[in-house]
Image 1 (cartoon, rainbow, N blue to C red):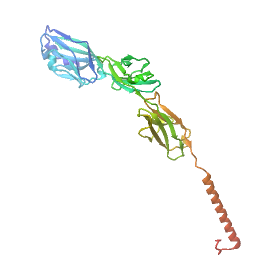
Image 2 (image 1 turned 90 degrees about the vertical axis):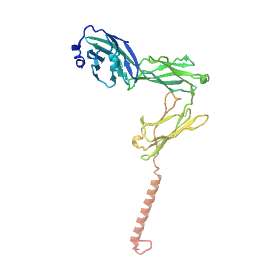
Image 3 (image 1 turned 180 degrees about the vertical axis):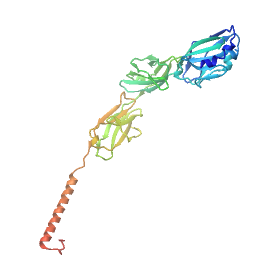
Image 4 (image 1 turned 45 degrees about the vertical axis):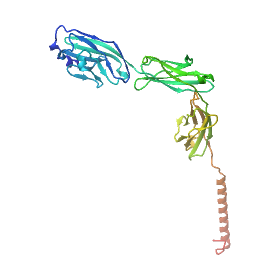
Length: 365
């Protein structure tokens, strides 16, 4: 490809051409932005004569853009300002930068017969975002949680603070890569809240090379109440539609999630009511699931699981179905009556036959 852009230059070679490229060796840009990777040069005379001039940009040693009277690119996101290039600014313009655009670029300028090159390392950066995922605490030991997302590169520093003082017992999990190449990481801190903490400002603070100053998310604690879970109905009839019910009471805040399982698999036909006020500023809610149990389900473990911000781990109650069999008493009584009727009918026919009473009011022999 390069020979097509430079083959016409040799025959126009001019002696004594002076060429020098200037500019930084590193270039930092933000993910998703538009940028110009700098490549400035000086020559004997500006603007340069297009007949003796060419620019070639390389990425990872492969040609991605060339100018020699015409511009050719390997990606429509690449471009160059021809007027500026003839006047000493051969910057590579890239739109909508992605993580994969980071790396070493080479600017090659030819003012025949002189050719100069310069490498520029492009560093892609993405600013982190802080989301506090749990600020609900109880009087016992509680865990505050956050997710820091959308940052690049991977190195990041996370601290938790109470009124500006750094807290201990901080956990930072291993960062995970997102589809767009950025990273996310979960962090938590364990505290034992007091009444004084109700007025304190808690913070999650992040330091990252994409930031000129630390990023910080401030919040106050929400004092919650843990739910109590009870199963209201586990008796079922075989091969008919039945409803199981469980109830969570005494929780705060009102946001809660209840899920039904059978041997660890989520059941269909679940329904949860809207939480209702309970007492002392707490809430209650009922959840049901509709099933049609068979003999196959008799040994299965059914579960009602509650997730709430006041809980460090989900609260779950496991149980087996209690099958109610239909009573045999009615069947026995019916069978006894039928047997009695049959006995009476046989006795009457036998009596009529013996006495030949075909015309009798009580016989039909």
